[in-house]
Length: 476
Image (cartoon, rainbow, N blue to C red; front, top):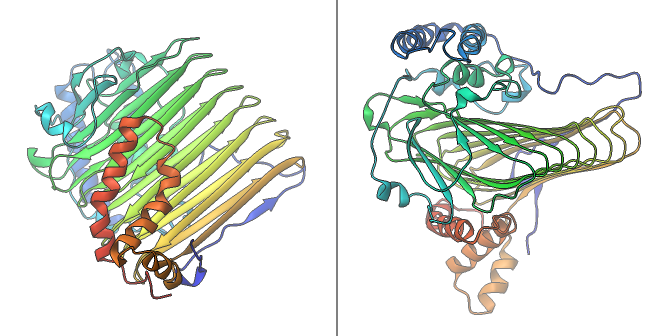
């Protein structure tokens, strides 16, 4: 039903490199960093004051009483060195995302404890009794229900191993302010199936004053043969300017299975920079599905590292942008063992003068024979002002593999709309049907009935805004 036309968008297509046995692959956890811009000195002073204030007022924050004090100190020193990646020239990871407005805002860290009625939160996200719901407000645990295997983040001795603060200024800043009372460490024992989905809800209440930062940290350890479902939600109670720096690290034991659903609907004045790192042992299966609609600038940075044979990684998502929103997806998988499978599949719906980025990468290391990897990004543009930069890429160092990638951007032509109208469907309903049908493929992967119904409703609520800013449907 869709006619894809690349002329509808400035689309950057990625490359495939085939290296012989003499080539060498880079460390997948190590990325290029930007040089600290001069105009961040004022913000550094502010962050430094907040950092020292927490060190003085939280017992054990910077002493041997807390296991992560050295990690915080090292991460802070690294952030002082690299800062935010404001300079984009020569920095492929941030080439299409302008962070200068982030650099101009005086964000604040601190203990922003805030009691919020659960009824207000239940209006923003589903919280059925059948789930284990963990509600964090401004970084502090406000409510918990069910039997989630939750421990404080201080009990995890491998925090920071997967999400390398030396390669990312946002991860460095989030790690430097790693909270003692915040953060989640989930340990799923082997070989057990956890029937209740674990729902971690991160709520920002910006009414506490000033543009605040929330840096939620989650560590998940999947024991050999364990099975679980993790739902991660990010929402805002207010329309204030704020920044969220979530970091999720996941270790998948042999034969472990995890379905990870992610919902992001922070306010359109917010900035959201999420990092997810997954290490997969043999026969493990990690499935990630994301739904992103919020934030002024949002970034979803996901990396899976397949180190055991027959591991499977599925990274799928849908993003919807309106007005001048900017959504950036940095999706990467490294195959370090033979007989592994990975699939990256993202879809975007853009209207107004919004912009999206898809930068996908699949690396197949030497010795990772019999790899089966696929990568695809499809975008539906609803306005002439919308723009997408899509860059799928493959780096292959093995010779017995099956890999494919592709990307496209376009809009629905007049013939498709006319066909629906000829069947008695009015114009605006036909538009909505086509948009809904485009997103349905990804939405169907949210297998929990309650979650699936909620996200379908969110799409319906967003539909008027998407259509109001549309000027290309029916004009091709």
